[in-house]
Structures are given as C-alpha cells and as structure tokens.
Image (cartoon, rainbow, N blue to C red; front, side, top):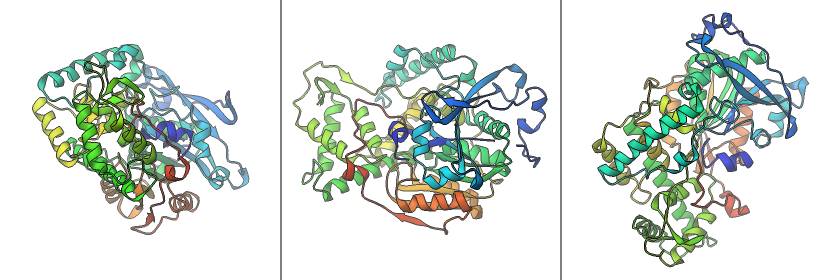
Length: 510
C-alpha cells in the first residue's frame, strides 16, 4: 500500500496484520492440546487509540513459550478498525506489514487508508504487533552496539572474523536487554499468537493479508491452522523453504534485474537526470570510487560514502520505484569532487532490530567459515555484476551464522489446510523474487492462483487498479483470478508525483 506506512516500511521487508473462535476442526497445535486449561484466553478490552479515535487499540496476553505455557505471558498490542457497514460485514481481515519489525499499531491509520472503501465497509481491519515488534515487548539493544555493525561483504578472513565477533556482541547485548522474548520470536510462535487472536475475537474464521515478511507468517498459519482461514492473500512472497544457496542466488538475480529496470527507464525517460548518458558506466564508476573510499557524499562532501549504502539505496528505491530520486543522487555524486584523503567513510545505518531474532530462528542459514561465505558472495557477484549482491540476503546470511539456539526445520510450508490462496507477485520485485512466488504457488496447487504484476516494485496490492480490483474481488467474493492472470505495468509513481524521495544515508529495512 502506497501510504505513510508503506513509505516507512516499504523500503523494508514488509505490509499489514492479524486476527482469531474454535471450530473444533482438529488442527494440530499447542492451542488445541488443552493449553487453555493452563492459560485461559481472555477477551480483548478495546479502547480508542490515543492518536486516532477511528482506530481501537487493545492488548492480548499470550504465553511466552507455547510449548511451556506455565512459564509466563507476554502482551501483544493490537489495533482494529471496525467495518463501516456492520449490516454487510463479512468478518475480520487480519493484516501484517512484514519487516519483520513494522508496527501495525503505530501505523494503524495509514495501513487502513491503504485499503479501498469497499474493504473498509465489509471487514474489521485488525492487526497486532508481533512479539518483539512495536508495542509488543519490543527488542532492545544498546545504541552504540547497533552502530558498530561491520561491512556485510568482507574481502578477507579478517573482515569475516569481524562480522562473527560483532554477531556475538550483538546477540549477547540484545538478548540481555530484551529479555526472554528474544528467544521466542520466530514465526511459529507468532502463528500461535495469531490463532489466539482469532479465538479472542470470537471469529470462526478470518481472512488474512500479509506482505513481504508477513507472507512467512501467513504461510506458517495456513500450514498449521488452514481451516481457520476464509481467505489468504500473500503479497510479495518469501519462500522460507529455499536453501541458503538458492536464496542467495535468487536475491542476487532479482536485485540485478531491478538495476536493469532503472537503466531502461533512464534510457527512455527524458526526465531522468542521467538521460542520454551511459547509465551503467556511471553506476559502475561510482561503485568503484566508493569501494576505494574516495566517493564524496554530495550532502556532506567532507565525508566519503561506501559502496554498501549506495547498493542498498538502489535496491530500496526500486520498491516504489523511486527512479527520479535515484538518478538525481547519482548525478550529484558523479559531479562532486573526490572526498579528502582520510575522510570518514559512511556505511550502512543499523537494520531494524527484529530482523535478526525473527529471521535467524525461522531459517537455518548458518555459514560454516570464510570459504563458504566467500563462495556465496562470489556467486552473488557473478549473478549481479553491477549490484554486487542484494543487501537484504547478504545481511541475513552474514548475521544469522552465529545466532544461538534452535531454528525452524528447513521445509516448505505447504498450506494444505487453506481453502484458497491468492498470491501477488511483481515480475521485477527487488527483494521477493517472482521465482519464490512460483514455488509457493506450486505447493498450494489447485487451491491457489498467482497474479503477476509485470512491472517494478515491492508490495503489489495497490500497484495498479488491475491488481487492487482482483485482490478486492477475491477478498469480497472468494473468486480467484484465472490461472496465469497478469496485470500490465503502469508508469512508475515517482514519474508522476515526485514521491518516494530516498537518500543513501537513510536505511530502509529489507
């Protein structure tokens, strides 16, 4: 959704959130094995949110550890926008903006505004901040520790060792400051929380819309509680069943493809600040200068800017896409005199804290040493000769290799209990490759449809009238688009409005 929430989360792994009565269908999970006797699920007490009366805020307590429900509880922050037309209300649409790390409660108003009037009339739009995020016992780390993150793509053993040493420091510090929830924030626990939300809301079934990392939660819930789902929309899909090697390859290829989309736009659009020039050569020269530490940041010419934030800038600006802002900054950087010798080199600002404790428990990506790490990086550079690597996958692989404790089993989530699924995917998405959506749709088989947007961007629901209309029709009537359905690309938003201005000095989560 192109809104304030999307502007903040979109250049993130993200979009929207969640809800929950027992129907006695026998889905196997801790929630249906008598845990209510140990931890009764209470009603949610709603009240007007302090910053917007049209959105209700609430809290639901759930077990910290669903396998040991007597070991205490945590509080989940929730938000709800009631259906405008109660007489025609269909039910609850639970939404999740992904990240992981985007707060639904903080962005309740813009998240709601991203939906069409008809959906707002027919559904209660409900979200909860997943554990460790926003107002649900958020992760805490020492600010100085967050700032000390070393480069993600070291060229030698010493640089690799620096990442490992930092990982241990980060994990110890954040776990100590956060408390027990640090070890219980994976998507399996959040799926149990989602089922608890459904129950507390008194709904026999819910509909769910999740985007980016929110699709992982949607798949996990569908795999384990699918009969509780009326409708399931997965927008910009991540395939958690991929091996580390396949994940690395897919992410490198998709970010390189996004770069070529930018080049093509600049070649064709006279408004591009680099129109008429060899854009690929300009980019390669800038990256080379950044790698040597001599590329001055136009905003602060006394400081140099490293290659990593520029690569991330290009990837992040492909979310909207923000091509005008990208071209403008590259032109300024190309024209700025070299940074003075010995100048401070600006690197990537910290990533959202939730990415490590959530993602690293969800996937068993554990590099065993520099040789394997370098082999993955070399493969990325082969597939992405201009972009080098995808900063999202490079961050996950770099930061997960020393994460302590057990991880989820490496298996595809089959979603076999869900009655139907609509999968939205962009042909040129810079972070959730179209190939991942194809994989997930194959596993859902005849109970799903893949709807492809033939353009650039991350989060597809409001990418065009065609995408929005097909999604709304499914949520309202349960009618899936025909197999192989596609929506044509539309003119990039920033070509028309100038929105989505970004800067390499600002970090945007995967």
